[in-house]
Image (cartoon, one colour):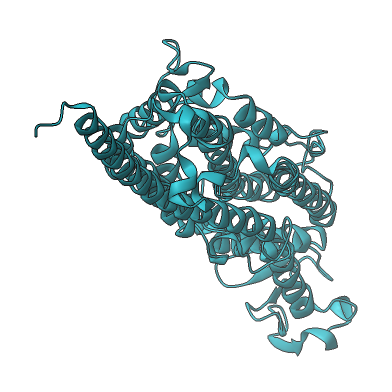
Length: 458
C-alpha cells in the first residue's frame, strides 16, 4: 500500500492507467515504442502512434501523418485525451494534497497535557474541611496538598471573617481549579481529535488512490467496498489526550468536567461514504465513482470537524453561563477591608501563624500551578497546524477560531485567578500582623490594668 507522501506519484500513475484503458477502448495498444492500432486497412498494414500522440506511421506504405490528418483517427485528439486525464486526476486529488500535517499538532497538545497535569487534582470542599476520595487519582500532589491545607485551615479557625472567607472563596477554590481543568481538557480533547482525524484522513486518501489504481490497471468492472477510518476519529481524540498524562478518573469525578466533556459527543454521526465499488466498464465510469466517493469523504471530514467546532462552542457557552464554576478572579471582601476592620470580637480563634503560613507557603503554590497551566495553554495557540491548502473539511482553518476563543477565555480566567490569589495571600499576612499588633496592645492594656490593682506603697 502506498503512503500519503507518495500520493502525487500515485495520481500520475492513475492517469497513465486511465489513458491506457481509454486507448484500448479506441483499439490502440501500448508498446515499448508507442501505440499500435488494432485495426487494419489491409492484412499487411499496421499503424503506429508515437509516444507524443502527434504522429501516425503507416508501416506498409512507410508514411507518416499528423494524427489529426489520418483518416481513421481524425476524430480523436490523442494529446487532448492524455492531457485531460492528467488534469482530471490531479483536480480530483488536489484538495487532499495539502491536508494538515498531524505532527504539527503535537507541540500544542503537549503544552495542553502539561497544563492539564498542573491542574489535575482531586480535592473537594466540604462543610468541615477538605477530603480526597480514595477512588480518585490525583496527578498534581503539590497542588492537591495546598488546596487541602487552605480549605482545612481556614474552616478550622472559625470566626466571622474566616467563615465568610471560607464560604465565598477558599471552599470554592478546588471546584474552580477543576473547572479550569475541564477547559484545558476540552481544548486538549478537541486538538487531539483534530490530529487523529488528519492521521486517519491521510491513510484513507492513500487507500482510495490505491483501490482506484488497482481497478484501472486491471480494467475491471469489479472492486471492493471501502470504509473510512476517519469516522469517529474526533471522538477518539478525548481518550488519546487523557491517557497521555491526565487521569480520566479525575476528570470523570467532577460534575463540571464531565458536563463539558459530554459536549464532545456529536448530535449525529458523520455521513457514511457510499458503500460502493470503484469498478466500471470504462475509465470514465471509474472516475465518476471516484469523484463521488471523494465528495462524500470530504463531507465526512467536514462532519468530524464540525464536532470539534460545536464542542468548543458549547464549552465556551458553559463557561460564560456558569462563570462562578471557573473563575475566582473577583477578590473576596476580606481583601477590600481595612486591616483593623477585619478582626471582630468573634475572631479570637484566628491563628496568625497559620495565616502567615497560608500566605507565604500555601497560596503561592496554588497560584504558581495555575500560572503554569496558563502558560501551557498560551503555548497551544497558532492556526498553522489547522490550515489546509485545499478546500477540504472546514477549510481553511477548521474549528481553530472556536479553539482560540476558548483558549483565550482560559488564559484570561486563569491569569485573573492567579493574580487574585497573590492579593489574598498578602492580605492574610497583613491580617496576621494586625492581629498580633492588636493582641500586643490588649496585653499592654491588661498589664497596665493589673498594675492599678496592685497595692500602692507609700
